[in-house]
Every structure is written in structure tokens, then in C-alpha cells.
Length: 326
Image (cartoon, rainbow, N blue to C red; front, side, top):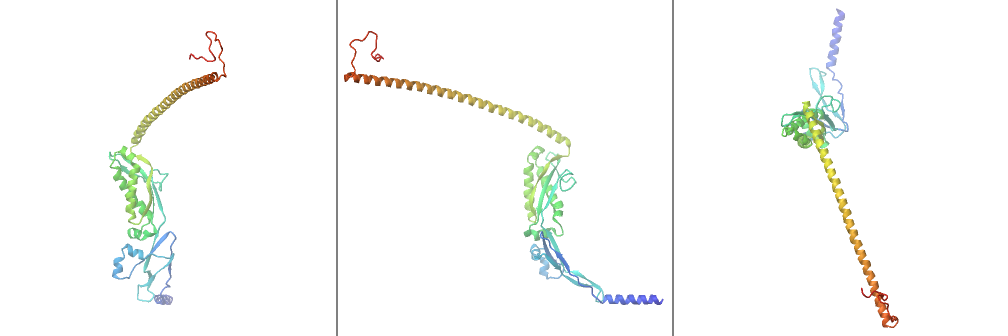
């Protein structure tokens, strides 16, 4: 009985002593990585004006931390009568925004993409043909937009935003656009459709502090009904055969045209050669006539000067040096 009373007395003494002593106020130190931007948000205090601004982007921007190591402020929160009955609580909260780029590839193949799940975008064409198309995206929060991102997505990471909100926005845009075209037209315009959706989404999410650097198609179109793909393959094979035949016809026409041009060129060269030959013959004859005329002139001059003596008699039928009858 005596031992029990002693134990209770000692316990009471310890409890009394403990309640009279405050615990050590340990500093809470947080480090900020180079790819992070941090905000120190007050949890209590402040004027009505400050409280009214608490939900604004300007207020968050003013609470941006410039250093890479900070001490979280604390205060003593009393929870009992004794001086030591209480605990230290934080008077501000440090929120970090990771600015590193995040990429996602949503595909139907479990061997590719960011996940082993079928994460392709399932949509329908205007003629109610269902298919799935993959997409790829890279996004990040730039330093200048961190306060805006925190305002819209407090407590969320970029991964969360991409896997949920951004993915839903892409699916909604693709569903709306592909539903405007029959399958054949949508298949031909898929790149154009994706570009249009990407443009709208980039502009929309930029207003909320997210910079989307890439957003495009990944892979082809996978049809829910496999017979659709079979028919497309047959149609493609038929179109390919027609294109091959048309290419052969165009190639033959080109060969025929080249042969015709070659023959025309040979004919033109032969005609030009004949004309050149005729011109050469005429030139030669003219030169001969000029030589004969010059010789006759020299002969006549010699006779006139007495240098050349004409024969007294010329045999009948003979010509004198030149045929003067020509």
C-alpha cells in the first residue's frame, strides 16, 4: 500500500513538473530545389484588407520566396492550465511549385505510352464509327506563371493536372471536332483536327499558368469494330493499285513524249544538215565562178596589154583556155 502511494506521489510530481515546462521550440527548416518556386502563405493574422486579397494572384505573387532555404515560423498554442500544456504550431505554410516539364503519351498499346493501360482518346465520327487515337503532350509551369498556377491549382501537381483536367480537355476537343466529319474525311483531316484542338487548349491553359510546349498525335486510329479496319485496308489496297496503274500510264506517256521529242530533234538536225550541205555546195560553185571570172579578167587584161598573144588559128570545136560560151 505504501509503495502504491509512493508511486502515485512521484507520478503527480512528474506531471506537475512537466506541465510547468514548455518544450523546446525546434526550428522547421525547408529547402527549395533549383527547379522549384516557393510561396510562404500566412495561416493566421493580417488585416481585413489582407484577408480580402488572400485569394488573389497578386497576393500570392507578393508571398514568393526568394531564398532557397527558409525557416517556417511557429508560435506557442496553449492547450491547458499549466505553462507547459500546449504545443508549437506553424503560422505560415510553405507551398512549392515544381517547374520541371512533365510529359505524357496516351496510347492504346500497353507496350508504349506513359502507362500500361489503354489511355487513347476514344471518339466517334459523324457517321457513329467509334475509334481511338493516341496523343502526346509536354507541359510545365514557367517562373513568371507560378502564382497563377497556385491560384488555380493549389495543392495539385502538374502530373495531377495533366492526368485529369488536361486529358479531359483534349478528349472533349477531339470528340467535338471528329463528330463534325464522316470517317473518311476525319481520317484525312486528323492532323488538322489535332492542331486545332491543341491551339485552343494551349490558349486556355496558358490563362491558368500552364505552358504546353507540345501536343500532337501519337500513332494511328484504332477502330473498335475490327471489320472497319479490314474494309479500310481493302479500300487502301484498291486505291493503291489504281495509283500504281496511273503512275505506270504517266511514266509510259513520259517515255513516249521523250521518244517523240528525240525523233523530232533528229529530224530537225537532218533538215538543218541538208540545208547546210546545200549552202556549202552553192558557196563552192560561187567561189568557182568567181575564180573563173577573175581568170578571164586577167587573160583579157594580158591580151589588151600585149602580154598574151592569141593564136592565129583555133582548131574547130576547141576552146581557148576558157569556155567563153558559158
